[in-house]
Image 1 (cartoon, one colour):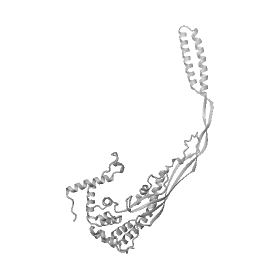
Image 2 (cartoon, helix red, strand yellow; image 1 turned 180 degrees about the vertical axis):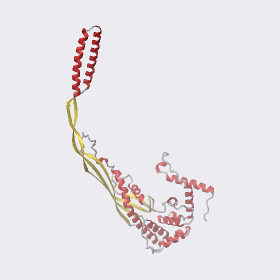
Image 3 (cartoon, one colour; image 1 turned 90 degrees about the vertical axis):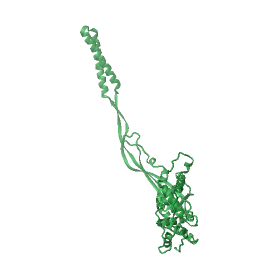
Image 4 (cartoon, helix red, strand yellow; image 1 turned 30 degrees about the horizontal axis):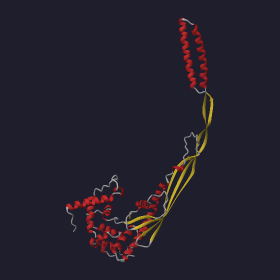
Length: 399
């Protein structure tokens, strides 16, 4: 029977485990700088850490430090255990097992990489696989290795006319006399004559008549000054634009990026390897205008459609994501075959528990296992066996 830890020991273990989890969750750069954000542990981290520690005391150390096959067997046995004191979700398994009981897969790149590729193509490939790779522990250690041996990237851009676009442009200017200018000239001539007459009348007049004549001369001079100002501000000619119709081209640029890759899936314990050919693509379109007159009056602007396409690096990343979707299924199938080969090797070496775990990993990857084979009986025996004797499971011939 499992004995719970005393309260003081439990508190010390909680503090130590939370410190270790916090240290492991920090990025490498945060160790050299106090400006990096600190990852706060999950609120249920205390109970989860204690449960994982308690279960580590039950599970034989040889199984926890063995290959992924043994980890998968621990995960299977844990799913069958009736004890309610350990959660059975992915987070709990990650706390107990280094790979969560999944098939570790790491990536390397030996191919020639184009300039537009991400700085770490291998990591980018794993990121592209992540949404479709539930059976794998991506980036984990001793398991399978996916090598990127060939990488070919092409980007083709074509621009074509979609439809003609009617518009108009200013072809020149037409001038004609300004009627307002002519009217002001005539009015000024009349005002000058009246002012001259008023000045003449005011010189010989005396008394009240002389006062009225002086006022009249002053008023006519004011009118002359006003008309002169208006005439100075009025252009003698009026100009109008000569607008002519023309046709511009509405265009569309289409960029198609294609990423062709050859990937090799290897198991370090086997000379055999699986070669995968995959192609990812990304397509973008952008509209534009060409043959737009520099004096267009229809609201059109010269726009090169190709310049509105996304950068090449962005297209390559999109093609890589598509490649991840395309290669996920054949990669998982190839991993299942590799797991079957590993199971056969472990069985030949007399390690039944390891072989059974690798068979379970193969099943996770969709590999077909004969119904009449002994692996199901071995799995049932493993689920019924105590933790202390789990590593002694035997496996009859299943091939």
